[in-house]
Image (cartoon, rainbow, N blue to C red; front, side, top):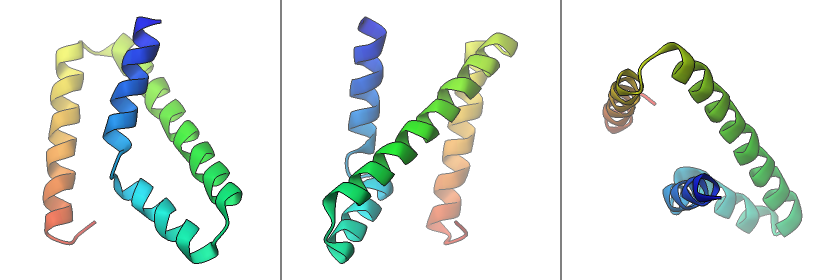
Length: 88
């Protein structure tokens, strides 16, 4: 139960104000339909999370956690710079 709550709180807080949430907000405002937008966004988040968890499990079996953290941090920084430069 501890890991479930940790995952829930971490993802919930990370997604607040995220561009995905803003995209769902804009789509819902434009289409004026709650359930199709909610269900589509929820399913997309579930599938994206499933991919992340599966990749984490595979990488966790193949690499030390320290390397995974460093690699994740480097990718995060690179994407941040690319977004700032307007390349992504």
